[in-house]
Image (tube, rainbow, N blue to C red):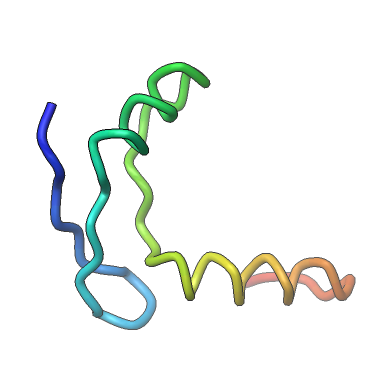
Length: 55
């Protein structure tokens, strides 16, 4: 496995999906790669913790 560069579907910024992250995803049984950069994932998680609905 090698590091992969992915474009965030929310902000359009490129981010690296490292070899270690890929191994973690595989270990957890996740089949899809992340679609959002770490900043957008963090923001999305904070918004969902406020009890609002995501659309």
